[in-house]
Image 1 (cartoon, helix red, strand yellow):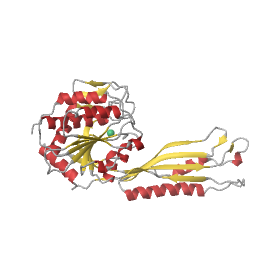
Image 2 (image 1 turned 180 degrees about the vertical axis):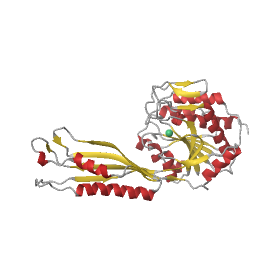
Image 3 (image 1 turned 45 degrees about the vertical axis):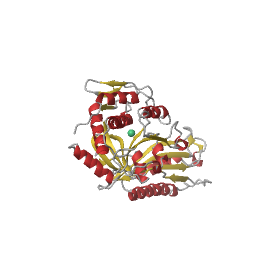
Image 4 (image 1 turned 135 degrees about the vertical axis):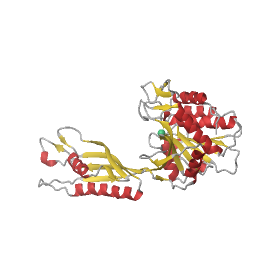
Length: 382
Ligand SMILES: [Zn+2]
């Protein structure tokens, strides 16, 4: 099937989007620019939610509704995030001889996630301009993904008519992500007792030493075939001659099994507890004991789509119609889709061909963007 996608317009749109600054919490200008592509089409609806109250962004999440011409089809949504990871101010896009896009090296490119946005714009413009028959579609553009999935977290699924959808936000091509781990932060604070290390060395309880003992007992890295753990931040102490009375550790545990996640969290907590409780006053008759606090707030919930879910069946069919076999697999990290799934909106993540994301050597090929656009067009026009 030959689709009339405009490859050069896709390229121009992508470059324009990348060169509009949109760090987290300042996505408003980009959102307005995206809307401008569709302002001249009647029958479309534009909606901005009230998530700014919790995200602190200069815009809410944005929805564009396309009524479709196939009322028998389920409405389907497509999502991209508007914000870009730093450094992302003043992006200049280069396109080389093999039609690959790079930044100049001073910033990221921003294909994550502007390649997805450009693809969606091109697919919907093509659909409308050529009067193609298509399912009801909603485009959902979220804010603050890179700083903790804040826009998706604050998003209410009742803002959508769609029953399920796709987030265009992964590496690889013809890839469909069907699952992603749940993750919780680990935040431990250890309180000792401060004392001058030279003058009153027996009057102190070193929080750093206690933290070290606890950390050395923590299982870190790959915990089992579904779970990982890391301590990524540590701070504490005031001076070389002061026995430190406070240390704070921050880390995370993630797992594709919620039961295992909670078992590991409990284990971590018990290690801190045992370490502190097994402290003995070495005979100096100190008037205090060490103490600790342990918190494990949720970072993002589990994503796990059943093989026979409508959203995966539709992707499979769309791939089949293009004579492509898609690769289905799990991701190692969380994204907006974790929250959509958790809120009852089955959402698969599609690979869009971006590579070396979150680095200044980020790149994407125009041919891969076109390939993804063909898949999206197939999904909505089946
Ligand atoms: Zn992304």
